Image 1 (spheres, each protein chain N blue to C red):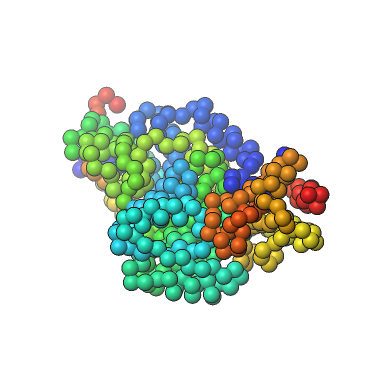
Image 2 (cartoon, rainbow over the protein chains, first blue to last red):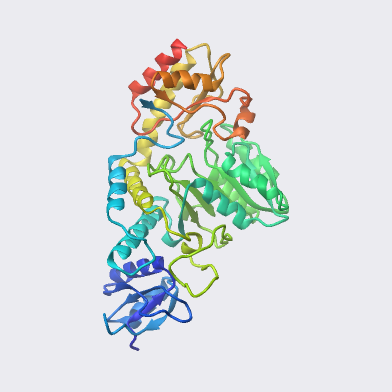
Length: 76
Length: 376
């Protein structure tokens, strides 16, 4: 599964998620969602270039509310 | 000035708190809104404070730490967000108006309350008093951890257990205890902890917290922008954003973390021991002065926090406070926003002079206070 951006429902979850993933040895960065998501509007994502599926699993196990996955904007 | 009004707000603030606030004002952007580096850095500072608060109160869910303007706002969120028409609440006989005024307002919406009498130094009788006040409609017990007038400490762990025995939610006003008495949320039955950030935690004024340990989440008092889910007019359910609409007090929150770090480094037990040493000494000295009226036994750690209130025979407490002020001593007189606590002790007419030390108070400060009182 591609789509390295994991969209989460709040900036707090983004911060907590980043810490969880870093503690698990998975590199990630917090970004704003690449474009306004029609369903949710603006928000925050975790950019996880490697092991994204594993990262998503860790986040779910720690009750981080995930809105969805997305491709990263080409400009970044 | 000798400052002995630390129950109102601690002063001075530790150097690291002042530096943290100044640094935060020098470099910050609106946290939780934009995606540029400075905004994300500011968001991280807020998150780190949430984590520090969770750690400070031995609680595992940092997202359930909600920043508020003060302890009063936290109390209002609990009372107005939980209670519905027909519900009943139990409070103690020592409550501050932060609890009583919102409750009184809620009576207009069909909510009722009972007052459980507190028996100083007799926790069995106090817990029984709470038990007797519970009825079939009781939804919530809310009580102060410690009286802001008399320093009387309530057995909150026992009251929490009692509440859950009856399937009742339990909320604590820790305005006078946080930073002085250890509170371990993960090992307790407390559902809602309301906290002042600027008193025993030594943060800036304009900071407070609500920690929600319960699965029952209050309704909101304030709705608005959170920087997320913006397509919808519906307020998000996620904590803490559900309760944090609008731009937060960023520099205050960063300063609050520095305050918690300060207390952790000093150790709560050490701060408490120091303040009790001063208050016990003051009690013994005041006891020797015939015109000074004391209302309770010598305070000890089991039943009190380090606060001492007194009066001078034939004088209004505000007059005593004014004389102390002229002599360079800052104290709080009057009713301290707690008429119930004064009614309990028969001091509604005179009020009382309250002495509340901090970690920075010296024995020489107390000696000077005693010398001035002797001359009144």
